[in-house]
Image (tube, rainbow, N blue to C red; front, side, top):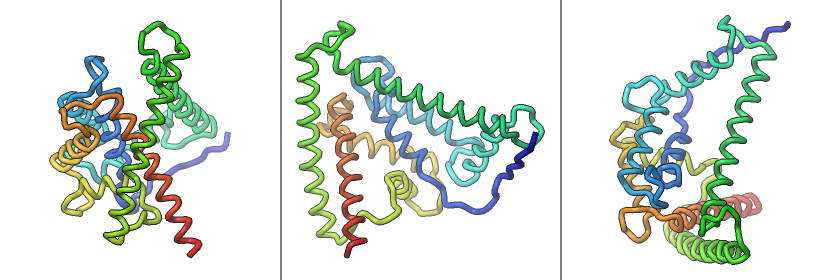
Length: 239
């Protein structure tokens, strides 16, 4: 069988911010709700962030940088290289790809289950017409709030002269915000500061906890911001 030899690139790459984005999402998301009471406290968010940081810090040096990316690539390669001979066969690559697809399907199913649980307010195991209408109304309200926030941010961007920035995604923006000294390394202190700032942003009523409504509002605001950035990019291209 033909072998496909894969080498791990040692080229210097800019540190990606996906890990920071994921940690922030989970810090304000349902999976951080350790006691299942429907709200996420700052302590629960910190506990979840600790787990995420440990997972991202692949080499265990207490910071996130390019070496962690390289260590993760090496680990993924080793996991796919099931016979341990330093090369991947076509069959091994296919198996690794199918495993990733299965993981994504499981995550989608878990999200759908969470949404269903939120809608099934009486815990009956089914969604009544009233519960469906209530969920639709709540979503409509959240979208209205997100549109208002989007208009406010648009005004701020115009006043400051800042645009969406082609090629800048949310992860990279969060990374830059966390990397306060711009050394392409996110220390544990920087990571914790960024997580707490993200928590405070989602905790709009300042109660020290994040409710399901606040999580959904933050989600809708992110969607609105992405839509606006796409519109700005199209406008810049057409100009």
